[in-house]
View 1: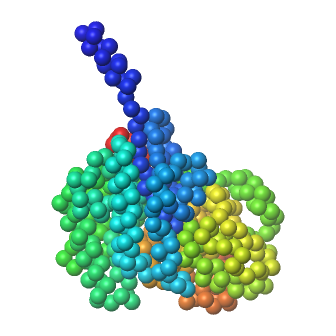
View 2: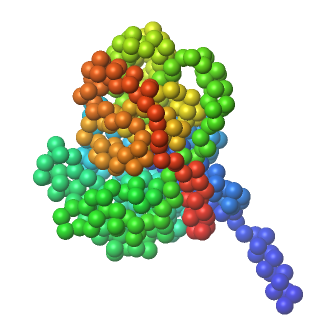
Length: 416
């Protein structure tokens, strides 16, 4: 028995370190911010866990600031953000059709992923909207040799009215394929995590003859609550950030940002057109325009009372310091403003089903923000009037969860 005990001690001493591979969608920066927060919480639960990131720009920009290790094979990934930018024009991105046209990119990136997990054993692979890996693993389930966790903040492809009957049929077909995959290979995802709560899921159908999206999601997902990765700053912290940014207490600070991709360039120009008019209506207005990592700040015209910056780390702190904001319809930026209790206008990309349906539904549930269609934002006077009116609006948003990262990490920790 003593020999057996010594053998167990030797086995424990020789145990290899646990490893996880994190895949974070590169379309925007929202996934990266929440995934870093989840990874940090996961290490608190498993201090010996080594996390590698298979990632591409602009996610790698966030990972660099956070000190997270990027796998060398990331250099072989085809850039999804570049494809999305090529598919967009003048604040119009037909997101569903753009994803339909990126098969070549998805195949390439799955092959890179498969080489990585062939070379190194990972206890856990986490895919935050890693569509390529989820789809091709379901098509080739024999390739799964690790625990696999899937994360998303929306479920269900939805047709835009402009797509007519043809797009309605296509989205229903895509949804039906996903439902069939999940029914046939239930074991493939060891955990499906929805970043939100059941009421955040749209109350719509996957298509004719298919189940309701919310009903199906409640039956097949665990819910982490929203993941901000931060606690909303106090008034004192907000004041310190404003001082650091160079703004006086009586300045009315407007932050303008369009997320991490390059598809918001047109909106930034429309806001710049409205700056002089808005400042005539409210002379105390000052603008800080954040272009993000994929739009050159020098490409924007200069306006008196407006500063232009590129990538801003910890943008949520800057957003929390504002008096009003103008943003695109991306979920993360809108929810950061919601968590901070800031009034804001959001302008969804035309024909972007997620921003126009899924995100708008969630913001309506929180009572947050005012949606401005792009056609209205194109008129400088209309945009200026809406902005000035928003400054005076008293916000009464539903509180945003602050423990989402910890809850998601606890679900993932069980798989290691």
